[in-house]
Length: 129
Image (cartoon, rainbow, N blue to C red):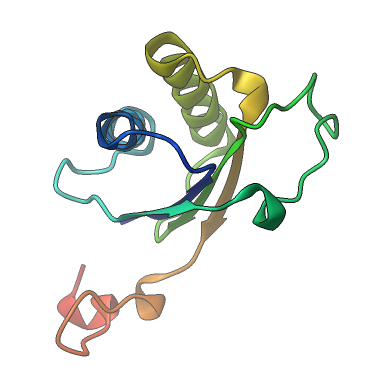
């Protein structure tokens, strides 16, 4: 049950946004055991003045194509799963959209079923999942 906020520059077409969304979802399904219908993503297009980042910190050089993926997931994953997700996402974005791995940053956080309510004011933990 990940929720992902994707922050990127303006100018991507609707087709490119769909591709980024699909690449992320397929990567989550492959490496995080996420079911196909479990897709919750928010895309934020931010102008340059609202995207402040160091082009070289822990990177070989970020460009204006820099994208941040902030993933909040309800079930902890192993270090290996997180590494595999990061690598697969970068590979697929590069191969499909020419978004260089230097331009991809991921932050992964976890919480519990007590921290999610999908609808009707019920916590996920109340549903017995």
